Picture 1 (cartoon, rainbow, N blue to C red):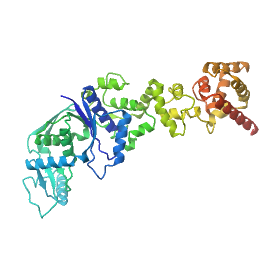
Picture 2: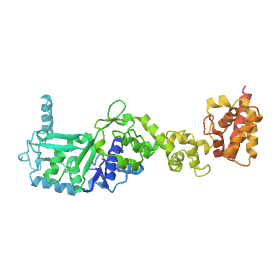
Picture 3: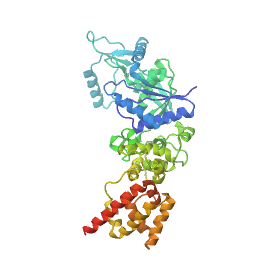
Picture 4: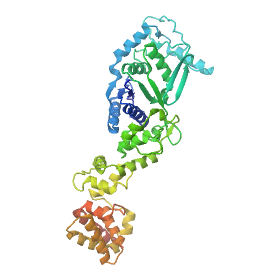
Amino acid sequence: MTIRTRFAPSPTGYLHIGGVRTALFSWLYARRHGGQFVLRIEDTDLQRSSVESVNAILEGMTWLGLEYDEGPIYQTRRFDRYDAIIQQLLDSGHAYKCYCSKQRLETLREGQMQRKEKPRYDGRCRDGAKPPEPNAPFVIRFRNPLDGDVVVDDLIRGRVVFQNSELDDLIIARSDGSPTYNLTVVVDDSDMDITHVIRGDDHVNNTPRQVNILRALGAEPPVYAHVPMILGADGRRLSKRHGAVSVMQYRDEGYLSEALLNYLVRLGWSHGDQEIFSVDEMIELFDISDVNKAASVFNQDKLLWLNQQYIIATDARHIARHLSHHLGLRGIDPAPEPDLHRVVQAQHERARTLVEMADISEFFYQDFEEYDAKSAKKHLKPAAREPLEKMREALAVLDAWEPEALHQLVKDVATSLDLAMGKVAQPLRVAVVGRAASPGIDVTLHLVGREACLRRIDRALDYIRQRVEQG
């Protein structure tokens, strides 16, 4: 048997973290077993679905590298198939027309709530009902078995038993003829030969209903695995108030897709004490049956730490390709000198995200607008004038503009002035960078380049002169 899993988002919003984890688990399960992964867009909610949301889902899947073997398959292109199945269920007696008005159903529900009963349809039209008037509107309900049970051997939750007596006759077609979720998902999973359905545990109560429809159609139900929800730090379900918006926001905030996938696979799953997994390791080691039954808590600090580990360990050229995007957003073209991958090599241990790396790397490509006030006050003092003048003279005539030669030059100037090296390097750093933090002074000078270094030292000397004049 070929394992076939699917990810079936509704395009009524962005692709969020919970959806990504479900997609990842489904993708990993298929890849580990040499199976196939299907992307299905459940867009039958015509009022809420949008092209923008579809594009956001596809963009997110592409950024994450979760390639699919089939799809995207759109439910809105399968209405004829759903209509045929609904008619088949009507003809076989597994479905019926219900003419109950909205007012009657609301009254029924209110009475059940008052009696502290479980709200459910009472089956009034189950055994055949005549329309109250010609062309009266109706919905179509599935005739659920009245006795027996549905046993689901969930790969995460274990065996779960549902009593049919607890299930009501759910609507499978609305009064306008459009199919409902529980009908379309059943037809799609059957037609697409889905063998394993991995989805959020908010669908647990839908499972017995879907199993009964599948059996009415003579189809074999897939194997189910219901993934526990993700909670925020406050113990509530992860939502927008926790910052859980589009997965693409994580890209915009400077996270690497590999780091995000690594973080999400560890939300509820583990392999010993290992924290960092390559995608190949995830595929080799991941098993859905090892996913924890309890909900997981989203920890932003842990994600930041993991992202930094990836920035440190990942090939600099790979990081540079992604950092280029963030520099471009700042109006910086990183194609000219210095080579961006050398900037990454200099900065990779100094940033947790690519946004932070872009922030602290702007000075390599363009002059800064102003000094960090604290750094300038401490290091661009009158006493720094002579060291900066000496450095400018020496830098202007230096033959080999290389880190080793630059380091020796700073050392020589400090020696000539009988100063500690820091008394020369720190004013020089603030002059060239605009603040008191950067990579080593030799690497910093080398990457900034001679012309920009001399120009910025001149600016710093002017700043010191003005400071002296102002008293």
